[in-house]
Image (cartoon, rainbow, N blue to C red; front, side):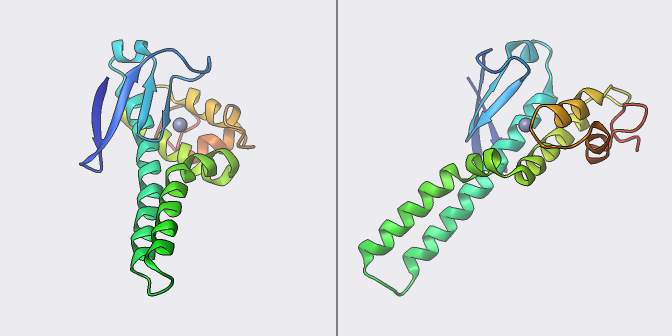
Length: 165
Ligand SMILES: [Zn+2]
C-alpha cells in the first residue's frame, strides 16, 4: 500500500492488484486506488496521475458538502439537533456524490475522464501513441461519443499523438 497526497495534504491510498474489469488498468473509489501491478513494474506514472485525478474529483465534491454542512450548523433555524442531523446528512451525501454523479450523469463522467486522461497523456514522452486513450474514451465509458470526438476532447492529432492538434 502506497500513500500519495492530492492538493498537497489529502491522502490517496494506492494498492496494486488485478481485481478489476479486464479492460481497466486502474480504478479509484473515493480516496482508494487500485492499479494493476504491471503498471508499477513499468513505472507508469500516467495511470497513477489518471487515478489520482479521480481521487481529487471525489475530494472536491465531498469537501464542498463538508462546507455546506458547516454552513448548515451555523444557520439560525431549528434546534441544534436538527442542524446537526442536516450536517451529518450533507456529509453522507458528499461521500457518495462523486460516485453517484459519475455513474448516472454522462456529462459529469465525460468531464471526469477527459481531465484524467489529459493528465495521464501529458506524463508520457512526446511522440507516444495516444490513440488508445481516444478509443477507450469513445468505447468503454458509455459516453456516446465517436473516436474523432474523443480525439478532439483529448487533443490527440491525426498522427495519433497527444497535443499535436
Ligand atoms: Zn478514469
